[in-house]
Amino acid sequence: MREAREGPNAVLWVLVGLLTLACAAGGMQVAHVRDARAEDGVQHGRYGAALAAAKAEATAFANVDHASADEDLAAIAAGATGPLKERYTTDADRIAASLTTNEVVTEGTVLWAGVVRVDASGATVLVATTGTRSDRRTREPIARDLRLRLRLVAVDGTWLTSAIEQVD
Figure 1 (cartoon, one colour):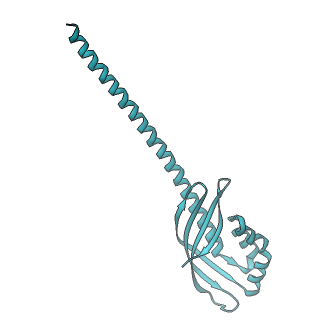
Figure 2: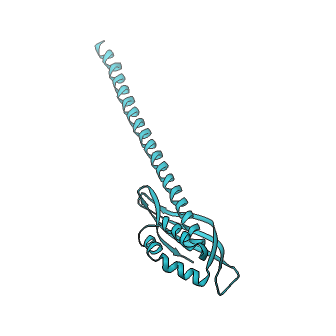
Figure 3: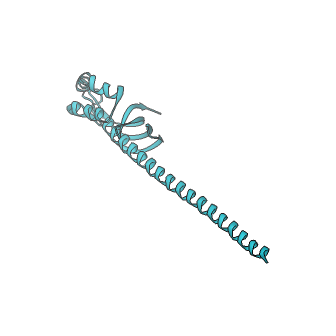
């Protein structure tokens, strides 16, 4: 009779052990899903912030008027960092003089923008703008569409443009 009692106890202990393992595995899975959701939230935040910064910089880049050149160049510099910022601060007087001499007026709006890559340290965003450009030669505004690749870096929690390139 002693053997009969040990059989059910052993089966119960095996079931308890299996249930314990199942609970532990389930808990690890829940923790993994929670961590993945948190990382997704961080990544979505990066994506949105980089996209907004790129659109703002492209808008500033596409809208420059010789009559407000200092302010317009300062707007580009405000969203920039590194050599790009240096160009629009150090060379601002020279660029403004050229804009004034040539009576340059550019106007543009962002049609679309898309994030190509984003991580904690940087992002690449493609932006399409449409607008016009006029100068002393043309007198009348002519259509101008730009396709831009902006490279951004995170600086103290703010996305700043480190390079703007025209692409075909």
